[in-house]
Image 1 (cartoon, rainbow, N blue to C red):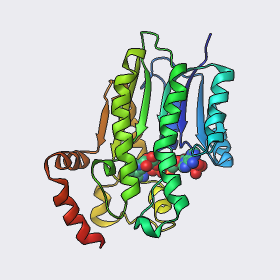
Image 2: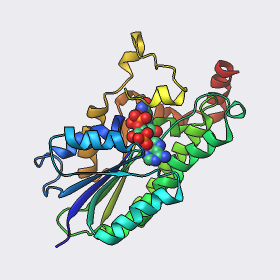
Image 3: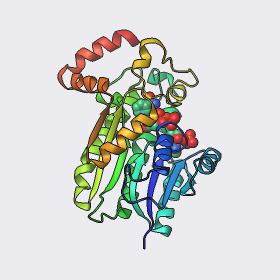
Length: 268
Ligand SMILES: NC(=O)c1ccc[n+]([C@@H]2O[C@H](COP(=O)([O-])OP(=O)(O)OC[C@H]3O[C@@H](n4cnc5c(N)ncnc54)[C@H](OP(=O)(O)O)[C@@H]3O)[C@@H](O)[C@H]2O)c1
């Protein structure tokens, strides 16, 4: 008998951690059949170990891996190959951003952003899909965390926005490729979420979510709950919350050159 597992990348903080905590205590709210294990993947082994002991279940399996490296991907590939689990759920939440003009950023920062946001997510799907066994009752699920930043080019946040366009495009195409295998793929496109992300993206500057801005920032637990529910319902894309749906609509109907001209005035 195969053990039924979930894999969450970026599980050490923010949105990934919120998914982990919800799924660790899921009593059928999201998935009818419980998971035997939840593999929590990120680089910081100490944080993952602390999380595994504090979350109140022995299902959490910390897996320390830098997914932007070949060796990190190999760690997961070899663990899958040796344990041969049934992966019922993969959540790709690991990611990073870099704010500022691209020419002022290091080559390493640019390469790491593309690597973790695009390459790692794609490779995780490729190595995991063969271990997803659709049983006719519950389909296997993949949830990719994109961003509303991916709807449009964003001067001042160019590499990140382009990487999230990739996530949206790749996820939508993969939802068709993987459909015959009984695997549902959904991409989540949130606006700003209250996590460490903004501080990391600005190399230490705390995000200002005071005043009017607080109406636009999302709680990571609310986002994770809405994402799991949408995934179980078989949705292909979740744009969250409502304010981001307006941005999504605008990105489809307003010419990109107009938006860039407007945004360009703010960043140059
Ligand atoms: N927060 C927002 O405003 C926002 C909005 C839209 C979309 N998103 C997206 O949501 C996802 C999660 O971000 P978050 O807000 O939860 O940010 P976060 O709190 O900074 O979490 C990022 C996670 O990714 C992991 N990670 C980063 N690089 C990694 C690597 N090379 N290998 C393995 N794990 C790596 C980090 O763990 P370690 O440092 O331990 O490796 C951490 O667990 C990202 O894809 C982000 O683009 C965020």
